[in-house]
Image (cartoon, rainbow, N blue to C red; front, side, top):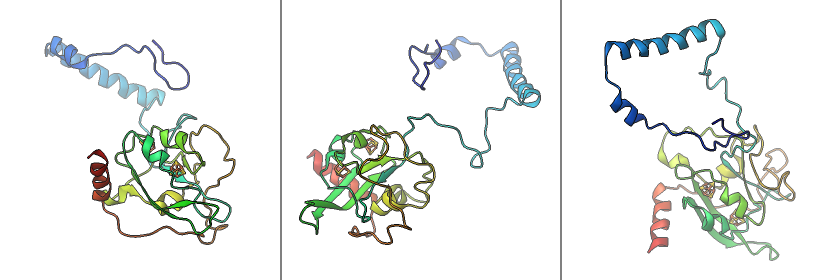
Length: 218
Ligand code: SF4
Ligand code: SF4
């Protein structure tokens, strides 16, 4: 059955590849059939220009309107984090990949702010629950998904990387339930010369997240 519009596949027949492979005998005929498939695609690419591969990274695929990429922590007008360290996103997160440490906010009207807010991107499943759970519009997702890294530690995004990594607004916000942003905004280094309440910046290690999860389960 054809997948419905919007990218959701419903009632798609399942093909058990290993079962089919067991039934197929390797013969000269099956080998020729395999070559036939290869040649068919070769000629389609050559003469019809029907090439399924793209020249990445120069070319990128168009994603659905509901695409959810790497997170963004939004800010207030003064450039300070919108997050009030309520832990709702960390509580709802099914992958347990958000780690927050709260601190008292200098402004008595705002109770708390996160002195530490890490997301372990290697554990995140991009479900968007954190965005839906946030009462402050403080965390949204972007349309960006490039996360190449040289080491494991780089895949844990801290406040600075979540808030003001280079190119954060190149593709704009990703799927979110209430758009456009009503009270929050994306950090703009031209407008917000410096963050009013900077977070604690220190070397992080992936073990930090795992330790916190182990404590949570005990
Ligand atoms: S998108 Fe889902 S898995 Fe990723 S941090 Fe948010 S709640 Fe957790
Ligand atoms: S991002 Fe939102 S849900 Fe998560 S701690 Fe901050 S205010 Fe709470």
